[in-house]
Image: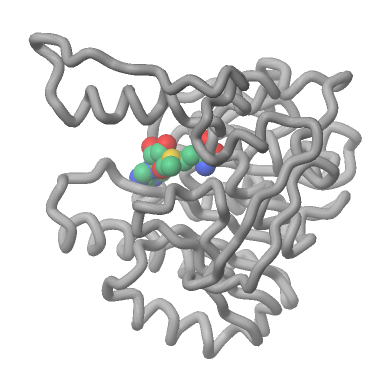
Amino acid sequence: MSKSKGTKGPGKARKPPHASTIKISGRVTPKATVKVTAKGTNHGNAKGTGASGRGLAVRVKSAKFRPVGSTAWLKRQLNDPYVALAKAEGWRSRAAYKLIEMDDKLHLLKPGKRVVDLGAAPGGWTQVAVQRVKAQDGKGKVVALDILPWENVAGATCITLDFLDDSAPAILKQAMGGPADIVLSDMAAPTTGHGPTDHLRIIGLAEAAWQFATEVLAPGGTFICKVFQGGTEGKLLKMLKTRCAVVKHIKPPASRKGSAEVYVVALEFKG
Ligand SMILES: C[S@@+](CC[C@H](N)C(=O)[O-])C[C@H]1O[C@@H](n2cnc3c(N)ncnc32)[C@H](O)[C@@H]1O
């Protein structure tokens, strides 16, 4: 674990890619019609014209030894405006925009807030959290963990550890040194391609994250967690509803339309 100096985050001089640049409208439910509009950024290309603004899709030839799925993945990455925008704006992952979009709606990551970020690598959410709670100005605090080795994010305490390891909760609590206002989990085990198995694995991680959240969240706190829509998340929702005043789903525009991924947001933890 290290309180990182890390590599620099999105450039200070660069205008952050949120608030003034991204506007979400629509009801916030999994069925919501959400719309991203852009002012002066490549978000205007979110309809798939290519982040470069050229309006040209990148074609990917299948390579002899590249599996069909990898070619499709590569093609999607190369034509994904969020991927290019993340690169241009200094976020480590396109996933950063999912948190930006959710927080632009919920206004939770305020200066001084204390955040735990589970499943944090390569660090997009961690960068967003550090920037918004102003952790580098000595205000808020961000403790982030991933099972994979990852590069420190400046301003955050970055831990490499399996969250399901028995030692993880105590290590995280020690790193926090006090209660958390927000527990984020974007954890996802590598997919097997077998839907029910993948769903069970992600729900296992989500339930473990919630268990941990109940131990560290301050009253009034928030839990945000990735799940897959349409699966067996009933037990988790039931647990959340008994301990939090508001429980809802959000599918931010940056979450790919075809994916079953959705975020459960539990607000106003009752303690
Ligand atoms: C979708 S990625 C997270 C992306 C991240 N939020 C960002 O913005 O860059 C999911 C992460 O969950 C991590 N993960 C999966 N199982 C885990 C576990 N048992 N403990 C810790 N991290 C885990 C993976 O290693 C992966 O980096």
